[in-house]
Length: 67
Image: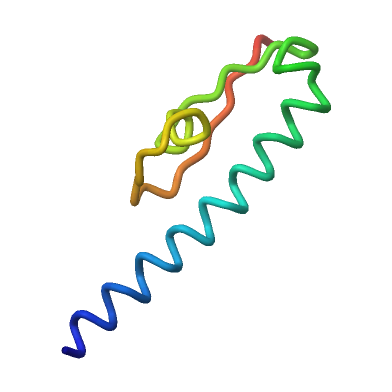
């Protein structure tokens, strides 16, 4: 039973973290005119999560931009 509670707590933490990351991605999208100015490419584990409902346990959220 304790393992089940730990798993539920972990899933809750991951979902809360993802909501915050999505807020950050939406903020950057707004400030960069849809990632166009400057041109940004969203990569990493959270890249797909911003656009599809797929739970990822990875913690990276990366952006690439031209120098």
